[in-house]
Image (cartoon, rainbow, N blue to C red; front, side, top):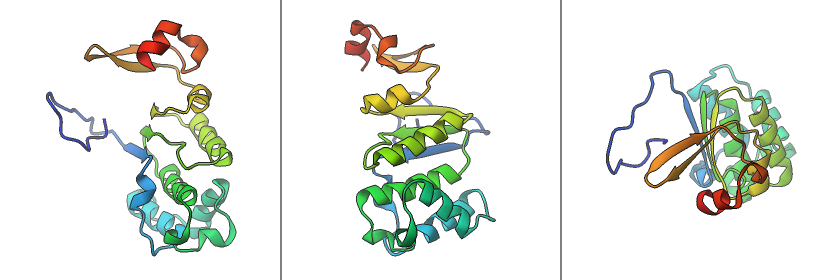
Length: 175
């Protein structure tokens, strides 16, 4: 979907209005280790979408995600895996996109950061694609449509990700 891998067959079409945001479970590994969290978020967002973003705005989002005080000014290389994930998530949240791809977004996040992510997703007006094994997270995402792959084709259905919306047969074949 993100266009990062070569296609086995077929064609990937992308609308000119598409603005795709990817939050991958290993995204935090690619962060520069010598920059502070605040510097990285500010510079990345300025380059991607908002040249006027201030350090204060970046620190506010970092703080909302639980990276507060001196942790926001320490080099990223000194942060824990969960703290690095918050840096990547802050950048993701501050860069406007009309389609979000979330690949195992709750890995390395504590309950507070997960709640902040769910709150942001609840207010988000674009499309969201979630790949996750975190059932409580999936059930908390207020999905209106679910796409699944079966027999080499993709089916789209109008339903949520709550377990109560799926029969036992559905859960066994599509989970």
